[in-house]
Length: 178
View 1: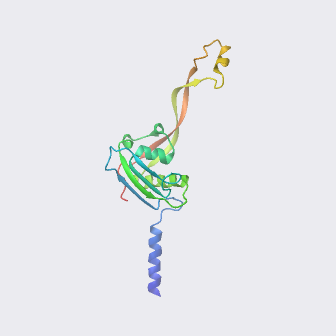
View 2: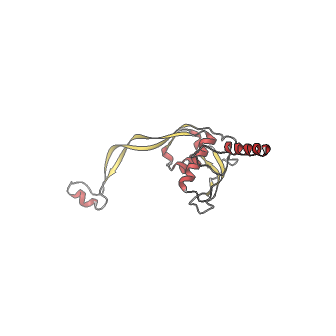
View 3: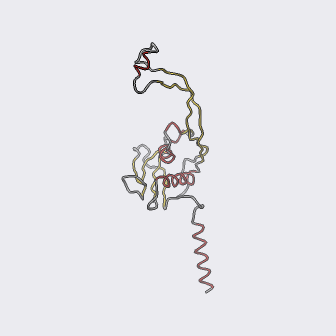
């Protein structure tokens, strides 16, 4: 009886240490490697909402910038940080729990990037100088007739534009061991 209790205790402890922190969504299995084809076109797919396998993700020669754009839902010009984000490419294979949503998938991917690459980032609003084109969407000719201006010219004004930017604080090029 005592031996059975010791075996059960060891099994429970090993299961507890194999778990991630509470509330963290993770892939069932994930492999991240530097691509051995750095000049190849990025390809692959899968995951929730895809026309490929929704429970499997397979990406080849994917630049880190693309992974960040996909995972955090930002555009290329919204990522501020390291110069190697475009040049370093990765192969990623992951198994996703059945029924996972796109939001859960993004949370899993964000956790994977934090765990394997030590990613630390935050969002901030930055003001940029720019110009805005002002015009009337429906009938610009009628709107400009009274102003004595040519109707084919839109009005341009200098403005300060606010943009949400993802700022990378820390990121390692090489993934931690799988």
